[in-house]
Length: 448
Image (cartoon, rainbow, N blue to C red; front, top):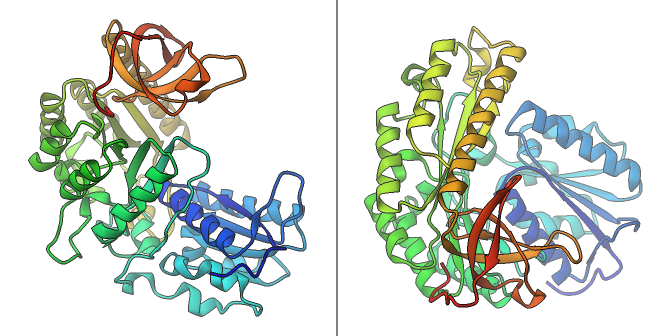
């Protein structure tokens, strides 16, 4: 792309998931390659791009609020809306503004920058399309992932699962994978930009490779990444329970730069609710998976997604979830109240759970998460772990970072340690993190 638009100031607002954040970073790369610059604080934007989310009704409402707020602050800007809410409710979004709006569906995000910079208004129908018919992933390259130590690398898009509470298959389309050669190229760009950690992400990342020639697995891809860029630490954003294969556990155990950190969605610990959610495992299988993970990597962090207040969830069924979570040795939970999402089968289920009951159950699960997190941190006190140092919270304050097994650490040290992996002794708990000491006597032999 040539530098023809050097007078254009662009503001990109991103809501939602890691995939959206990766895609927005790709938009920024392409705008900058075309000669545009990012809008600074207090500057008037010429172009506004809002990368929306629709995972819950609340997320859709937040997307609308963000768009209106940005339009008020930048009334003359050209407005471009993309993401899941744009895919789902394009017609509704047209009515938000009196001026022209460019709406770009998820299947055409690779065309967003060119359409935005085209002198004439973009064609709405051309840029939304039927997402379920998409067979290729959008080819989006990120030249610079902000100033963060950690970068996200999207290797897969779409989902074929159709859980009854989830709108994402309707907004993201079928599972599509990025060729491993392109994944490796992106990892090398991040390496050359001095990122020390990459989170490999997607909408349903465990389905990676099923649509590619030779059907490579996510485990094979991660093994290639670890070997191709050994100075980078890798994490896997999330993996479905039945996609935690022996092959994945072997790669994680053998590759020194694949972090011992699992994030596995449970959603419910009750078999009946799991069936109604269209989740394809039961509580016994889930428990077996978590035990295999912790047998293979005893020090690993184990994060679990759980959704409570699903239609018809009884008190006993909720207790089944709590009981399972207490048994499986998790390190932390991501807790979500069920959100009724129009367009999904569960939105029409009877016995919707009242808000106060959902709130109470969320509070119980978040309290459990805090207990499990503190127990996990406590267990590692007195040990020395490799820490990727990310920043100072404030000038003169302690350095902050995460251990290989995702424990947040605070310790005293020089600025020269920022963006380095250093050995730190974990000493005591303080609020939501562990306070440690840089151990100069220890050497880390690899990125883990």
